[in-house]
Amino acid sequence: MFKEYKGKSITRKAFEITSKDQISIDYNPDTHTTDYGLKLDNKVIRFVAHEDVNIGDFVVYLNDKDIYHCNRQVFLDRNKYPAAQDVKPEAPKRSVEIQEMMRKMGCNDNFISSQSIIDRIEEVDYETIVLAGQQMMFCGIRMKGGFVVVGKPSVCIDPANWRDEIGQKVSFENAFQEIYKLEAYRTVCTTED
View 1 (cartoon, rainbow, N blue to C red):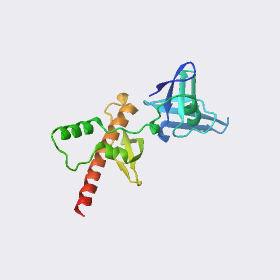
View 2: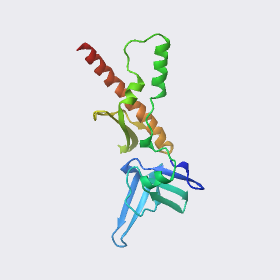
View 3: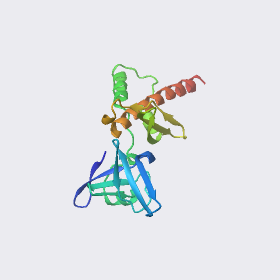
């Protein structure tokens, strides 16, 4: 989904490329031209690029005839934009609510806090795949030390309802819950030694 941002004097829309799977690149050897496409919501949106397109770069939408690539550094130098990799992940709301309930009920002994997990996250990455005809999104959370946790995927019953933002939220929460289990095991083993 394209997100609005404020540039110099006009408001544009931009999409941050977060996965190789979001981009199609077709080279025509006869004409020596390359066609670029952004795969978004089961459509391919053609755009112009004058340099290599990389993860973290942006596709900028002015109107249906003016859609173009902008490398990450140039885009961020010229615009205010909350990029996915520049924003620290937040704990899922449900986890925070349960911890608040525990505190109110006097459960103050050892427990795994959402914040302790958030503080140990190095990177979050998403991958959308199609498996047996079903589109799904996985979230990989790399913790300090390099260990990566992947949770259950986010799936959508009707492809017309697929939205990357929803898939990211659901798959992140699924992976986050897996970290709770691993952190609990680590804590119990550490206290027993």
